[in-house]
Amino acid sequence: MFLTIMFCGVVLAYFVFALFCLRRAVMFLPLFFPLYLWKAEFIGVPFTLVECLIYVCLMAFVVIELYSNVIKSRKKVLVDKLTVLLDKHVKQVFPWKYMIPILLIVVCALISVFIAPDKTYMIDGVNLFYGRRLALGIFKGWIIAPMIMFILYLHVLKNGKDILKILDIYTVSAVILSFFALYQAITGKYLTPDQRVSGPFESANYLALYIAPSVVYSFLRLKESLSCMGNTIVNSFFCLFRFDKDNLIEGKCVTFLYFIGFAVLSVALLFTKSYAAMLAVSLSSLFYLGIEYRRCIKEKYRHGDFWRRIFIVAAIIAVAILFVYLLDPVKWQKMFDFNSRNSSSVRVEVYTVAFSLWVKNWFWGIGLGQFPVSYQLGAMGVIGHVPYELNMLHPHNLYLAVWLNLGVVGFVSFLWILYYCLRECFVWIKCFSTQKCHEEGKVRMIGFALLMVILIHGLFDTPYFKADLSLLFWMVAVIILVPDHETKIKPKK
Image: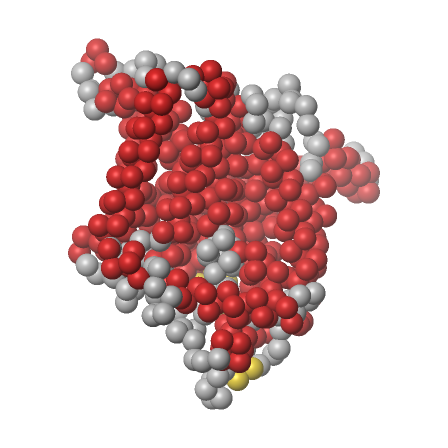
């Protein structure tokens, strides 16, 4: 009872905060993404804290708009004021085109709720799986809440500096979770049976999925900050640790904070032992740097300096791989053994069963959140024996998960959003390298790097169908798609 009262107090306080500072309240939402673990039930319906904070931000937005545009001015009738309000948002170049795939996703999710059976017996024939109730919870918390947050961000974010602020706030939440993970590694007080750091989550993969984009972001911000300090990046890095008065320059403290954040996040990611996350972070970073320095590569591909840099990068990658191997050599060896129980053999079984479900339900899908019971009841008939793991929440693939949960129309709508994101990024490829960190092209490409982490990781896991991960996905999408009202010169599309 006390926790419920405290929960209500936090939500009410945030509503008051949003009424007076809506922009700040919306921008601070990423700090609360992991607090989906704090739940309260009202009239039999469970709500998470971050979900409620999004709802009260929406309520504050509606109250502020009605008060400032309708109630405050009594010179015209209500209809005229509402017309002016609508016209105002249209003239602000609100990206209404993004609403079409978003509405399609919402409609498909709603259909998937009704597709889900109300109750189904699990494989033991005793325990009931309440599919309809679970589907409604997913629809409310993983579809509607992220969409509302997406729309609020489209309203409050104005330029690249705003976008960098919300990414900084998200990184702070990831660093806090990483400190928790490092505490687990030091003390040995793990929450998982496989002795991997997981933070407050029940799986190490959940932590890796959440912090992986922040590793790339902190790395890119550290690189940009070191570049702004002058001289070479290597000399600027060593300059960070010299605090004599003659060497103090503007921004050094901020750069040092990015270095600490990157170090903590990287170590925590290593201790999750999630090879998929490490691969996604590495490929995304290398792809971004390759695009950024393509002109330098074209000019120096025959010179020894270029090949020296390539050798250094290759050496760093080799050392990183060796360190990952030494961290858990047994897991590395078992990864290629498909005849025993390990992450690789389990994934093969999951992919086999998920593909079979996709073939049978390719149009409508199986319903929101119905994969656990569908996997249990169908696995033995597909693979011919009891699977290594009976309890499987997701198909360990983002694209299969979207299709199975939302059907073919929902999957196409998801690809539609990705198309908008990639198109917005590709127009800046040729000119972003010369821009400052807060300028539109650089911000778009940073968002592209984070999106690449999610999409690459999505080949081996499901970085969406979880409360914080769904919010994270739409946050990354909005930093790519939100209009920049200060940039006057746009690249040709």
